[in-house]
Image (cartoon, rainbow, N blue to C red; front, side, top):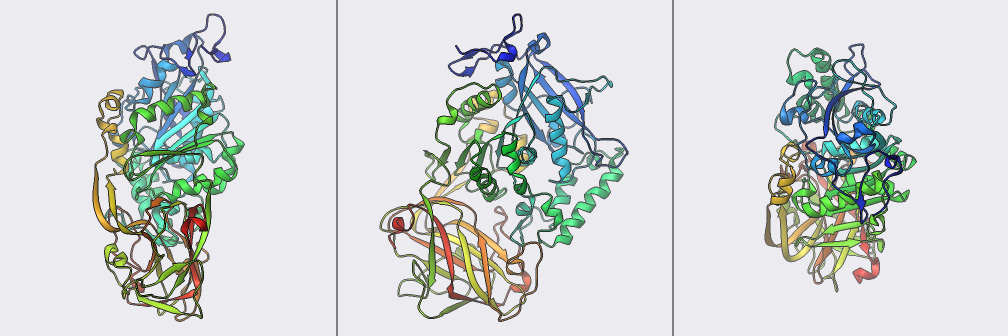
Length: 616
């Protein structure tokens, strides 16, 4: 048995029990203390002349009243009021997840934070704005004695039971808040576990100058207003004192989004957490990321972009990439998730050496459901390979090879709206609405691990152009479709310990279907050429003028079998599957002709083993 934490080792003080590197369930959950605290945040987001108070539900071992000091697992959410309604201001709403029953007996507090302007918290929601971050950060500060807190009766609430060590976790928007707070470099925030989380709200609503298709027919692209409206206390509770102020704040969010016209304006820049990623290291915060490779709600570039920032600074980290969509890891790996979170939190919050940081960094699930472990992601052996576009051959409408074409050949397509299946089908044949470039059949299987990037020299007959690229595995094989959930479904579903044990609620296995298809899309990405090379502003194009355009697709983690061909399809507008939030159409580009200059065009693929692995 290893020694308990020094802070709890005083004679007569209840102690944390550790065996085999793990905390043991020695404290009674039934006797645990539950309390409601209102933390004062350093802002007045509703303009009422008073600082916003952020509501916090706390559950902690009863022994904390006898001198036991414990770390905290924290979840901040904008959705609590939408999930269960609003209890009385001095009553906890209950703790619907599995974290409290599991961790409180093992010597932790579990805290639920109602984001500003939601449920019982004061202020106005701002959909990823600085106020979101400030509201959650204030609670970490309170747990470290740096912010004032009060009970409902006005008495002072001090977290004298807290060690100050905090771990934040959550899924979707609830996982985005840990990203936001971590990038502020908050002392005491020892770890964050963002699951299917956003790292840039611009890239959630847009893709490189192009608006994603709407989530609802009624959103009309003012998505940030829609979401703030959805979670807002001021609108869901008519007569609230903050309602008039929040009406104007929320409408102002929509106005700013609409005015941006999908440019990366200051409105979006302040909702981008990536520039502040360096602060995560300054605070010594570790990161455990989870994302689905077919999550088309919060797309994989959100994890990949933030992961790239922490990787280049060699921050402590771990990642799970699963084959599914927008879900909680309890839906596909519940026992393993509970076990790894136990060890992770013990290591980072209780300072228990249990070997978890000596294990492989990346767990990756393959389409057949199996799991692999790797020392890093992208794979350490990944090398960027530039493949050039070539003209048609007898068995391909266009080629991908290590060498560029002779001369200066061009190919053109008409921007016309067709289904994705039509756009990618029959790569050996020319088609009017797309260009397809494929490698020869692969001599051996090839693994792609990272983010593909396109460089295309092009011109158009219009003053606008939407470029779309799809990375395709050409060859017969299984296409696996795994069901996902919308954000509210993810946070509303029951997730008690019995759900994990019986595979119900949050642990209900994801529905999956398999179909043998002649090809499958591995990744895709889009750009409005008017925003190239500067996403901050768009400029009309000149018909016939040549432009050099660079853009990325979604990150890829795929193994392509021997005998298959790797393909890149270039096109413009196409029919968007409403479940995948592909881009809205650029109506002004439909009917135009786009010319690609093959000599100046290429794709960079992240290939494990580099050029030799491709055999080209």
